[in-house]
Length: 152
Image 1 (cartoon, rainbow, N blue to C red):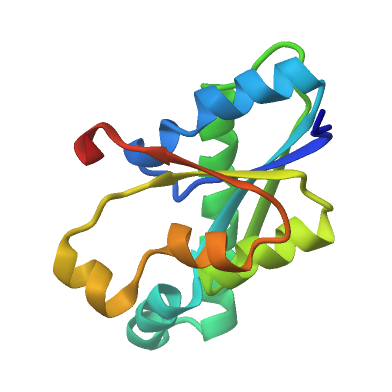
Image 2: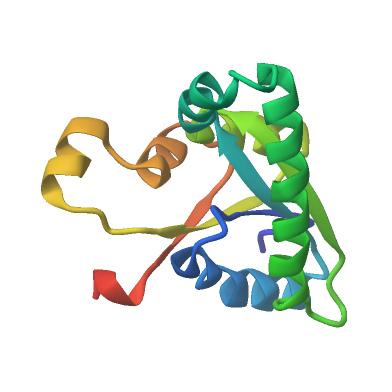
């Protein structure tokens, strides 16, 4: 039987990503696993913001402010989904989401990655692919992709 000690649960703090919490917590309770709840600040989006805000603040200060905001929001997000018998660890990092998720899974020796899918449209998927799909291709462990209700 597969042993699961560490689960990497990813979230972009959206309502869709909340759907991944329940299965992650259920699996964690069953196996007595620790859950690392990770939010990745996308380098592409923050770079665009810092380019426009940097008039009055330096870019690094913009990144620091965004990081603190993300840590606070992630903590609030986790509080609404905490399970009594599950150890949860908050992780905020920045980079290209699929690469950061794979890096964290390797670095933290994750036995399972749990993530929600957004089900974006065909055009978006055809040109960019999905973060979930990219993680599945490169992950060092199994990936549980939780579909949103919009996905059917």
